Length: 218
Image (cartoon, rainbow, N blue to C red; front, side):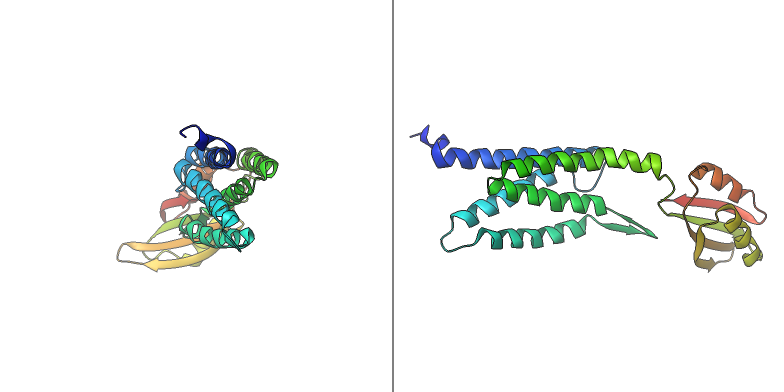
């Protein structure tokens, strides 16, 4: 009786949940190495849970498995939203949210025994996360926006300083201005050029007259 559970239908189910978990681990490991909020365990559980929902839906009487799949996708939307963080003008976690969505689809495919589809999607998804990211950094280094905070002396001519700052960082715009007893702060959104690093740009901005401090975040 003990060996029968690993044969026939039960054996196939075991293989499905194990494969779903392993494929989720492949994507999750890359996210874990990249120090993302949703990492290895999260992706493994998402893929495993998606496969289980599909298996349960397939075995239920008078139930369309695709309806179960639709509910899984809806649920993953809430989980993905939790991985998205906004900091100033920068949004973090969109790629991780997309990887969770894809991992759920992989688990669904395994649950419906679409082995090749699940395997191919895992391989292509991993290539996108690794290879395309490297290509972006090499070919499009200046496409992401950064947030620059300039701390100015009290009474400094704001328009003049901002004008000079925008000469150093042409693709920039003012997000906000604040005043306190010590001085003024100007927050800019910018896309630095591909040939100039953030440190060099910050040094040029710090050298401007009336600028006491520069903070660059991305």
